[in-house]
Length: 362
Image (spheres, rainbow, N blue to C red):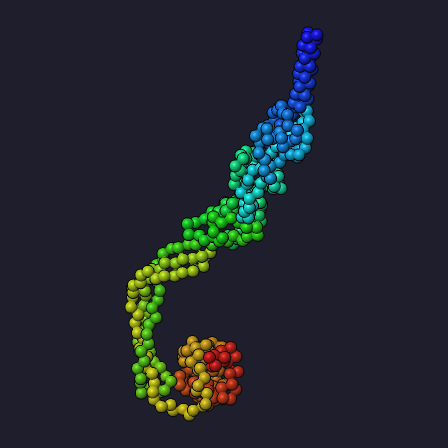
């Protein structure tokens, strides 16, 4: 009897062991766990995805991607994929923000962010790996800019990071004094106009005339209005050294560095008549008769035109006689020629001098 009891206890123990082993085998599962693209097989007793990750010591945040969801029940052969979030301090065409991606390479991150233009400038190699700590990334999309230089306008699309690089792309070299706007290190904006101003600085030496002064001496032997040069004036010469700054070929700044007189001017001496006129007033004395004479004859009272015109105002003989003149017009004193011309003006206005008559009113 005692022997039967022992066998019964032994059988119960064996049965319990079989049940335990069966339960152990049924709860132990083999799954595939992929973390950032690296896959391994894992044995687990966990019932959910969250349990698996907890047993593996994997903490996830809102920026991480877990497939399937954390509350999903885990079965034998289950596949679980985790991609950790990575922070990117992103600057796109000067606009900065922090974004999170689960991509492990720069190229994949650009695709994840919708930046798929192959012509973009990217500050890091597209094949570079992105660690859990993330990275800083600058992106410049193609921009249309206008470059104005040397009288030419160039339109181009560029991903250059600076105005300097745009000019290199356009084949424009700069001199040490040239001015550029915007500044060379500035990032070109879409639609920007880049202007290059060529600046040239040089020192030149030139010779310039010095006008002579005129000294008048009153002469009672000459009639009022008559003038006689007794000593001709002579212009002087001055040598001047200048610093010139030109911008796009136009002088923008002129500065005198040195100046010296090579030849002094000679003062002109003129005798001016003060003797009372022998002619009556005509009422036309205030007009600019000297300007008319300069235009008609160069101010020469003895001028003779082969076509039959004479003196200061180029009278022909019939007209000269019509205003009381005698002899030839150019043989009369300058004052008489002016007097006769004033009489003619009082009778016919400026019409006798169709080209030069307007000078009377200057």
